Image 1 (tube, rainbow, N blue to C red):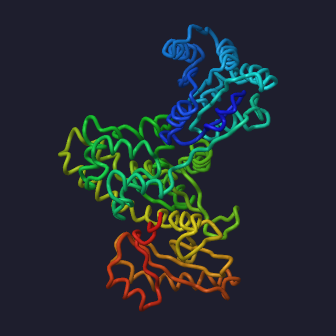
Image 2: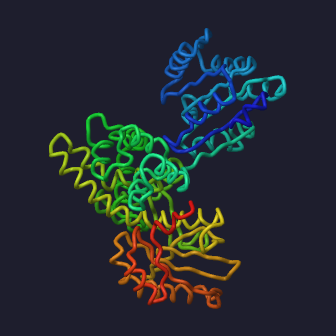
Image 3: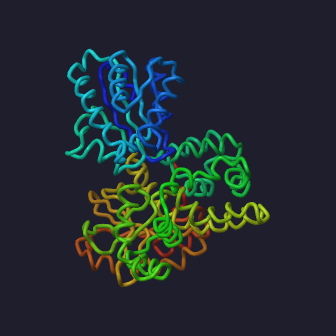
Length: 469
């Protein structure tokens, strides 16, 4: 971002990423670091042209800019004029210009962008557009028929903080205890805003229940309305039903979802399930369809999951207890939420372990460099493997079982070995490779490690996996 700003010539930057991931904060920090004083930030409302114009005039007044606009056309012209004067203009929630009533703005902006690009070396300012709805940002800027197609000079896609960065935060302000990492990662994943909220409430290093009570269950809790305000406010009816089902049944199939919708709403609803899944996946990026490792993209064995840890935790464990605060004792509701979160953490552990394997491999640490994305494996014959890691260079393949409760690890080994055998039957090219088995849990006692080693199984706790990060 600073390298883009330091060019001191025209740029048109697209920044995309989930809400709360830090897009606006990134701009603020980068502008300060580059010493740029002429700035205008506008958050576009989900409104009609008059509402957008009114909001823009409010921001112009706030930023001390004398100009005012009366139409979307004048707004586009003002952006061009300000960029020519050395301003960096940022339009947040840019995806709302995909709405039919606002769509003319992109054609109006195209004329200004083309004029500025033709004199790029003489234009000291630039335009930044930010958005959180991936499909609509793509439609505005990357579709060949879109007025602004091929106009951006730079693109940044902001993802979650990696686990090493989360650990850096915890080591500075709490501790990197493996149980705490799993608890917080299941709630917040890599969204910096949420860790900051916990820090500012003084509970980042607190026990589970005080943290939940402070962040979700008091009248001033910063995350009490987070999911409804930033994820669910644009969804109605059936979309919410599908999300609720996926939160409680992670890894369900299309047939499972159809059966659930039929039971809840009647047979006519089954025909719409594909449309709901498509919109939730492509437009909102709230869900994803995962395939068993090594499966072709069109395989029919896909399973659906909620992509975002916070949304999954909210829908499956927090939403109903939080909504009942006015009617039941808070301590009882916090206990209920904590109990439900512990169940969700079993699924989160699989994702966390896979990401740790990938990060360790990327950093060149650990005992297993991977050559493919870590995924699980399943088939229609009740074969289930939580984690499959492939090392092409050394011809090693590792099969893993993940249990939040380490006492369940010994009982899962026979099923793991049996499922691995079925996997090797289905993929005979691995029969000559070295097969390894690993058992993963947040914490594993020395006695348990010895018992697993006696069965030729590698024991890995989360503490083992975060070592060196």
